[in-house]
Length: 390
Image (cartoon, rainbow, N blue to C red):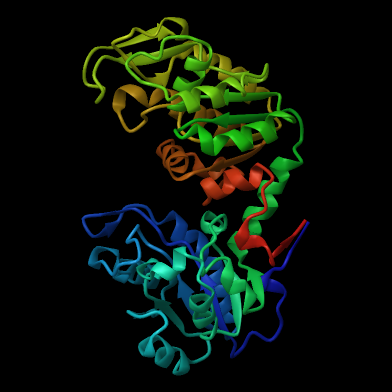
């Protein structure tokens, strides 16, 4: 496997570098709640600017569905970038129009500009070639630094690579190197999968379970496995398709919770108790793995030499149901600090890890969610087509 890295490009001075980043961060009351993704892109931006390139930043933000919506403008991103870089960043509220073209023409070496939200244009998600070509006309080279969208057939990710020499930014390169370590793991490998949407996790479970000692299941997808085993799913209704998918994943090394922390209120504010996974009451929801499951999962994690974790074990944002997720987070961080190589991915998973104040002990925290899962499932991602060679 080889990665076409931007670090290997000579004579960047004066070149217009269009860097596709992922600044799609959480914003609360017009303030950025978590700037992790922005921070991870800083090495690439600094490298390009220090090399004398004219740095043109491109990102999506929110889900404006091809419309120009005020709350999805990038001023808040621009301000945080300036603060983190300690350098002026010009924000051009245009993308392929005259304002953007004029701003690029006037750029000086080392200057940084941030163009408008790429998802304000419906052509982006349509992977429109004409739109991609217009983006490409702004630059001399293309730099992908956004694994999180590299599984999307979008114009600024996929089609644009037809019109410009394409390279990996430092973050993307680091993502690929570390994810490949999971695909060629030191044994034993332990995979922890939680969260929701089983259909997005089926390929990675199928691919990694072949080389894993154990795949530990938690979160909302547990309901699908309960249904597959003809056990009670409480008040949650499992779709037939999800049940069918889960039934195909009942391998010996796919390990399910043996107990849950449950509540009779969907907001978790009712009766809270621990029950056996075999006996989930019909009028209750399961919101976390129970203490016996934590002990069982800890046994696997402590013995691991490679760990990959994606998806919380329950509704960790609620005080009553955070213990399972935070226990797994602490275990993964503790083992990763020496004995094992640990990778964590997904926004909620990283947020939970941050709560433990042990995030720095994990070998690598990926900015990818769905894209990370697809890569680990062995799929070829559109955004990596001309950048990563297997």
